[in-house]
Amino acid sequence: MFTFTTIAQYHNDLLNGTTTCVEAVQHYLDNIGKKSSLNAFIEVYAKEALDRASFLDFERMAGKTMGHLHGVVVALKDVICYCNHTVTAGSLILNNFSSLYSATAVERLIEAGAIIIGRNNCDEFAMGSTNENSAYGPVQNAADITKVPGGSSGGSAVAVQADMCMVSLGSDTGGSVRQPADWCGIIGFKPTYGRISRHGLIAYASSFDQIGIFSKHLQDTARVLEVIAGEDAYDSTVSAEPVPAYSDLLQKSSISSRQEPFKIAYFKEALEHPGLDPEIAKAFHQYVEKLRLQGHIVEPVDFPLLKYVVPTYYVLTTAEASSNLSRYDGVKYGYRADLAAQDDLTALYKKSRSQGFGKEVQRRILLGTFVLSAGYYDAYFSKAQQLRRLLVEQNDHIFEHYQAIISPTVPGTAFKIGEKRNNPVEMYLADIYTVYANLVGIPGVSLPLFQHSNGLPFGMQVMMPQFKETELMVLGNYLSHLN
Image (cartoon, rainbow, N blue to C red; front, side):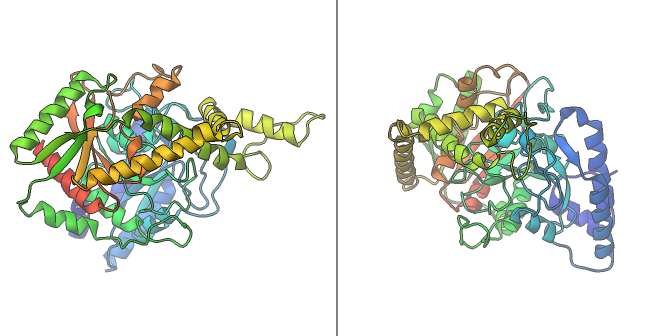
């Protein structure tokens, strides 16, 4: 019977002949079928995945060297393009649209030997915190099917949580990898902005969007990251920073004893926020005390700008979304409304966009258009840009004195499906701890450290300076084992 713990263990089993790629794919296909009611997958590439698994088995048995992700079964969020496969961003407006090319991250996965098993449900155009804003219906949390899994990458999180793939890719614009990872009890990793190419990632807010990774082990996260990160001629915002051998560095750090204490900060205002669940706050404080007893320096820092991070985030991201989503007009591709005899081009735009976009996407487009309008540009958009600059400066100052910032990932555990759909402001506040990393472009990870008395998981977020992914995973690994 096939079992999976880590990619390294899986590769050992392949080399020892105790399993095959075909057996692995069939295991996940069976689980996807058994758990289809969770609605994590929009489409499953069953025959294609089995055929590729068979080919990889043949190559390996013929003596060909295994790629870094040989036979690794991966699922993709429905905002990541895969050539000649449907990609819709969870929206009716892209219904049945087939991508003409693959995202750079997907190309690199395939070159490394990965098997793409399907595409995952998500909030429409990655706009949401619950995975309820999808043309394909809500995703259920495998820990409690009455609860939301988080969003926008909820389907990708549940696919890993419920053992329907080994790892998955999502996108993180303001917490859309870390937040669902928190609610599903798995690892959600967002790298530095520009660490992974955005070529082939359907845009929500271009200066915030970043492909992220879901897994159950940081060692697997490291292995995937070193494959998909790095320069790309198709993305002018991607970094030219060299890509470290993350998995080797993490492995070496795991087997060596650490002599120096960590110096870690947390935002005092974050722990005093009235929206924070008291049990999460208590667990966080107890964990901080545990770190101090281990000799580490963990200190509160003043962060008076905390109350501005969510408004700043939503002003800027909706403005960028208003621009990015203007391309979906019913003319060249995607959904086109039926026209009456008297309709003109303007009517085509209005009908196609009104019928093709869901309510949350419409809300954010309207908000973004408003803040960019002539009468309000200076009052909202310019002010938000100034605040973003202040946040970056304050972030740089904090990291002059501390190696990392920790916080709860989300103020509360997963809530019931439908519970907050009529209160978008309350929904937006769920992002209060995660949007910071996107505003300042730093890497962050949500670690599944705790369980609430209500039976649901919750985690801790760890953030570090730009391009400190290795150090972030080393610290994350230490914190996970300390618990």
